[in-house]
Length: 427
Image (cartoon, rainbow, N blue to C red; front, side, top):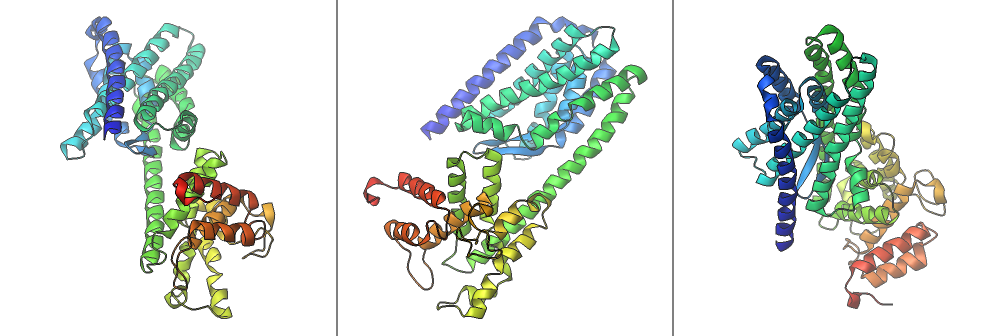
């Protein structure tokens, strides 16, 4: 609890510093508010608020999540149309209104989160607007490059402040953090920067009407992306529940997939694979036995040896798993293939395709090593769980270089023994 308190306290200090800088800039230029066009201000405020409501989670961590939306397009346009004080006032206020509304209905966040969101969006907007109006001139062609630059600056500032915040709260490695945050939906948002330039050009030549019309198209795309994400999330949760329900039927396999996934994740990290790939391997490992849903219970739970016919039925589960995962678009090309091959052997005697050595996808080899070790260390109907030393002996003498990738066996044992108490490890 002390550690959490320290992290939250550090985050509050960081948020307060951002807020102090933002308020200083606002107070310094407060006279700019005297030129406020109230109708324009309220119209842009409502447009901005509409976009802020539709967000897509991009990165989750232990004390919160990062969400992205096409709202940064509106933020940048507002920074170009209005002066720095007006622009930052709209964007900062809109950044916390949805969260305050959720808090009213019971979904509360720590006070520091509201301070941070208000301050960092306000500061990003102020600096972006200041940059645009400093570089803006009568050459509209040049202004296109200026607006593109401002969109990039807003994107960088926003993510820079966010990465520092997550680092303070979670302590995640900075390189890993940058890779995770600047990926997926967040990177997709950056690709929308040229759209800002297009809308700005239309605004210059058509007037204000171009903004709501253009943004209506962007908004419809954002809504489509939101529901696509929700569909993917629902599919993933459904698959996880299927695996969990399958394992819950059998006391011997309960929690197996979660433990395999955690081991696979640690191996992938030790190999210094990209955070995005690590996450994908984790999901594939979590779902590696999903194909067993198609295997009869009397075979899966049989306490004695299986017959040849029963073994052949069990051996179909990787292919069944592949077919199930192919139903989810995001799993179709990678995860489904990794699950298909997680019972291949290093010597080429595995199934279903008899792949050999490095012909087997690396994620499949990682899942295989984690799966075998976890199975050896767990109770089964036909035997009790083995000790680490017994499992290690089997891995080293019977499986390394024949069933499993020898390098991954060494990495797995290294990870496991690092995490064990000294007295549990025999040299």
